[in-house]
Image 1 (spheres, rainbow, N blue to C red):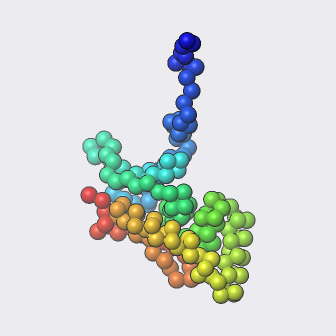
Image 2 (image 1 turned 90 degrees about the vertical axis):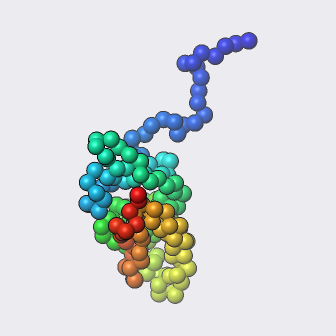
Image 3 (image 1 turned 30 degrees about the vertical axis):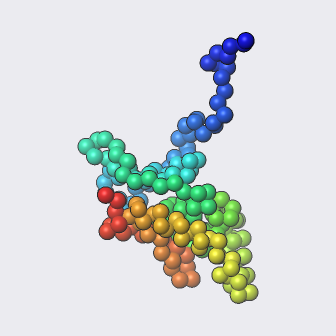
Length: 163
């Protein structure tokens, strides 16, 4: 019987490796109290509300997001406190990136959909995912609102702030 040493053992769980580049921190331009932050772990799909009380970090709220939910959440957080245009949301949802060329193509596609009268059908999958994301974000004290013919906006609702 051959014995395996610890150095030879391999893990089948690559997610165990910590990748600090996949964790993004957002203070959201003073929407959150001083010392509070949202930490978005893109590889695990978790958003954590972290409060700093007497120099000690405290996990206040945490939610798990699907890949699609992450794709609509990230541009909303990055654009905060401003709105996220439809074409940016569309590009992020379908392509995972918001490069200038991709956004321009998505803008054209949405314009064509508008002219053909199929804009609602084109945006339906995005709206469905946004609906689930909206429910999860409420536990953090945020809401997602639609701005007619413009895009979506992430808004801080202090009355919804996590306890």
